[in-house]
Length: 593
Image (cartoon, rainbow, N blue to C red; front, side):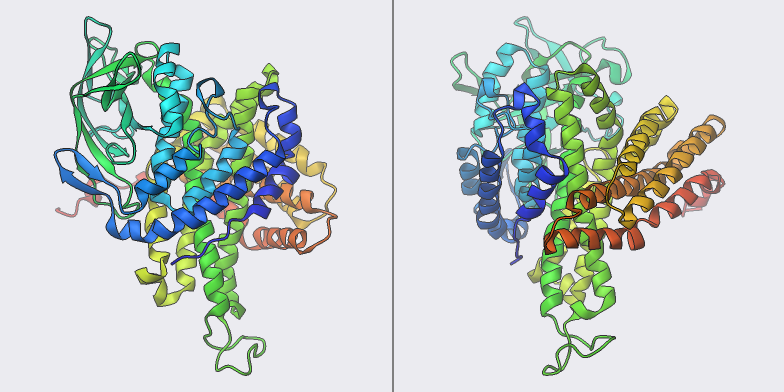
């Protein structure tokens, strides 16, 4: 079984020393109830729960998987129901929820750390409460007071769970072409008919009711995404007194057989004239759903971070214990026939790549979480607006770059094990398989890159990115530390600023450059974000004694020398444009010709 020790020291360092969270909380009236003693207790308890309850059922859950029994019945693997009940009874689902309806009102800067531990120890399990949290975010932001009263308390308590029903067999990224219909009834409800696919937690045995949030189109709705409305469609209808009534006309038609996250029930959901109620105004469904998508996409980045952390910890332990060959410099264990592979430079390269990714990912996720909290809780309109632009710009990076680099890191860590990494008993191949999905769902990473470059950069002539780069330059210029990361970050910022101007100009004459260059631009921007995070961590550690702080500087050295140079390769590829990929006839790709 995999090992795991929650990186609480790193979490507290980022939370308190890099971002000074306690001071931030006290500056916002809505967060005055948050204090570090309480947060420490939360982190300690989640570390225990994730390590002692979730990690032991991670591999067994993968082997057993979720099971479809026919007639819409789905069961989760052994141990999942007990774990879910314990998780719900401890109040974890409502940790960041609205206190008016039983939530605890913790900011994203706190909940992101508990989510990281969940995804590290059991990615499949984490998805069940995560989808419920996403649904409650949407309802809290867009639902009527009566709807909030009806659903939120039970969802925060975990008795009811939630889903997001967006994708259809013919409509994934292009939601404007969905076919699910919502026909109004005389009593104000709607009759929902259609099929949704890839619905995480669409059916299971963990909760008494499942509250589906469904995108559908009303009669005579405008074409495209402007005609989408959002509906709340419970598995069991809810009576006026809050008790459960009749079963709604919906069911799971099947579950998908997947590469990874096998214990998570990914369902085909059939709505056969199910009764639903509109959330928000008609034709505003996509906007309502996207209220919570920024939070969810950051959370997907945390899934990648979790995969990286678990893979790194296990690979590092293996490298320390596994003896193969001799060190290049001198024999390390003369009493043994071989030295531990941790003494081989290439093994360290793989481990340090993963470690640098984990620490930069955690810091960057915290940075974006702070922007989300500022946007949500700040009484200063200007601060909230600046934070909103940062969230808009950086969310696709938080989702796509973190998960791209996470998959790379898990593969590196699997490689440390050699042949044993390919054998399921060691658990590494499961981490690779589970983490792979994070690049695909909640908006595939290529689409995230296109959103970044097309909507957040080109569409506003690079103003959002220019503002962010100026923030980085101002921060680095004010650093007291003279670590090499300072100059490396400034140089990287200049390269991305120049690249942004070039790609904005090129897009005016060659529109394909946006699509063709988006992924490489996103990666270049992601490496700059990581450099900024390492600069912050170095500055926070500067002048403080102890190995913990010294290692921050050493890891930043490694990042600046061996990882950050990738930014320049991606920038060169962006400058090369899209002509070299578009200069092929379609027939070239048709193997039947």
